[in-house]
Image (tube, rainbow, N blue to C red; front, side):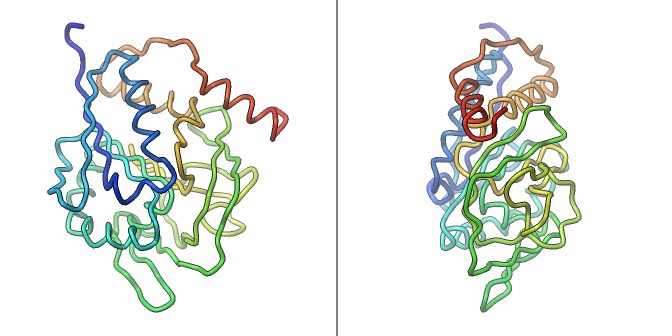
Length: 241
């Protein structure tokens, strides 16, 4: 097709932060952008690479083990100024699961304080008690509800940024907190893990529409795929909607 808009997705630390099949988010987003006639390329970057935060349009990082998270932090922290500028420049970031820990001021463990990227003012406490289970949220971005799963020992404290979701059932950034995630410009961060874009097709649709607007591409309505049916069946079975 003539004059297809090019867009580059960068899957950050794809080998270390892909504990729950997060690469499904990349495949689904790529397909949804291609349906809008984007020419989509995907770059896989990790600790052996010099990551360029000016060449990509959409950066994604998912969930890893606690050990891998700290390995990634040692590598990514040298790029904190570049990442901060990329966010200021309205690059898209989707950060899921415990990758969200990396973007705060510090991570407090039982034995240590580890410096974070400092993009946002929050701190993270690693606790012995884990937050595990299905989550049911709402968002000011879309009218449809958000579903997902958490499995984390991270408690996000002292958040001064805008939040992405509001808890209906489940856990927020910390216990008894109704706010979950981080929303700043085109930065979408949440402790929901796994293929959340596949599980939440309306949320993905919102992101794709926003990208289309930013790239001056007219959004065209596409027939709903099986992910929409799966989403609705899940709501019907578990939340009686």
